[in-house]
Length: 76
Image (cartoon, rainbow, N blue to C red; front, side, top):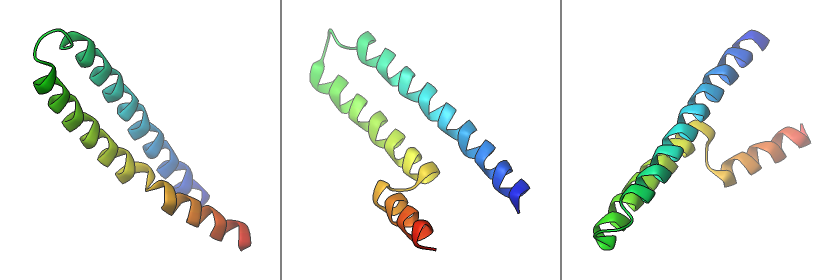
């Protein structure tokens, strides 16, 4: 059981690392596209950030879910 947990944690850490890299790429794109058509750029950035947030929730769960799970673990 402990090995499965450790393997899962490694997988989650790898996914979080990828999320961080994507976030950095989004920041670089923000700077690259910040001088021309702001409306179009903002729409593009929002779409990327929304997708990144979805991926983060898929990997780490929703903040409210995590807090509820932590409370449940504390009471066990």
